Length: 61
Image 1 (spheres, rainbow, N blue to C red):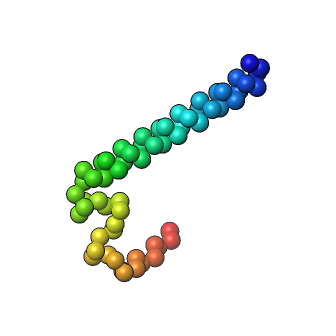
Image 2: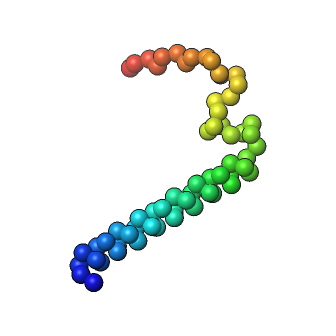
Image 3: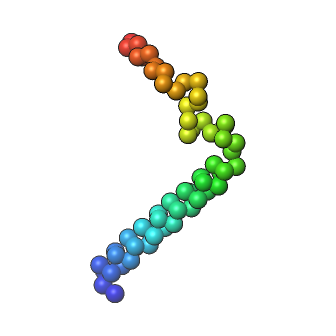
């Protein structure tokens, strides 16, 4: 194996590990989402009481 072969092999291993870790995170997130009651999933929805209500602009210091 030449030096370029080692470089390509290292990049391949790194990319494979990143893909596997990403898949693991997505699957773990989905399983944790199913464990939380729908009314407590704040990151998915801001709540029915704020739908359609625009927020006032922030004051500039």
